Length: 431
Image (tube, rainbow, N blue to C red; front, side):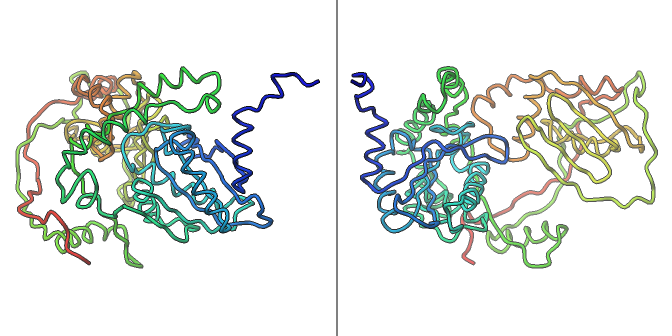
């Protein structure tokens, strides 16, 4: 006789039986790689009777595909399978069984995850390469934003109860004003849902440890919503446009669509002046080639362990892996790069014209301070925990390290040119 325990049906057996009765071939917790080294979790539902490749429909949101939304997904998947479509449900980064931290709704990284998942699905052998997206509310917003990145294999989207203008039509903002009733509903409940762990099977023996890490890292989205209101613009460059023309095009767009009126003036601000210390310079430079053609600055990298690398054509400035590395840069270029990582603008007051190389080891805590400051300076969201941590950071974090090279960052005040907004529409005019 078979062992009595082994003869009892398990929850997995019951789920497999339900999948089969719904006409589905299901693969759960399939891992999809991201461009920044994480893996995301998807559940794949395919027609069980399919004998040839099928198109696929993607839905991506934070509403926990493995428990809270599991029954809903089976309903949708069986409907689509009966009509010859596969269905893919993705836990957005930092939620459900996916890696990462959910810093906010609809982050740039999350949108790129959607783009990459579309292309991943199209490359699967069971797929025709034709992908659609649909979603209700959150999934609808995501569909619109992923479509704006133009994944080559995305054929159509069906966003329901969503909008392409979150400033005027989102549930959290109406006409640019925060919806107070939302502060006690979704904004609160979603904190708890984001902080819930993956199913034990997804994380294995490290389940408890990883849940504790998620609890510590998960931010309260409401704090960021209350802190700022951003209006995002997506525009396509005309054929043949050059990089140098972008600033003028953006000015024209703001003037035309927002009726933006500005003027320039000079105001005094606190700055850091990059100078040579009293003990003299401790690094040696190489003369600049006067005939060299300057190249455009290009910012690459991100806020991961890979850090940030600023490519200035003839040299680079990088902050990565607890190090600051300068390669073949003038002091004017160093000062410009330091501004991205500091709470003040940095100006070059060294009088030096050579190019320099140097490497500075940073403490891990100071490295984190610098990276969070860079994120804020460049418009990227930072968690409430990160902002609290940054509030306790000392001023002029990099100054103590630059002193090893004989350089100093002196606190000064000086006039800087600023652009003052005189007037602007809150909502842009129609195209």
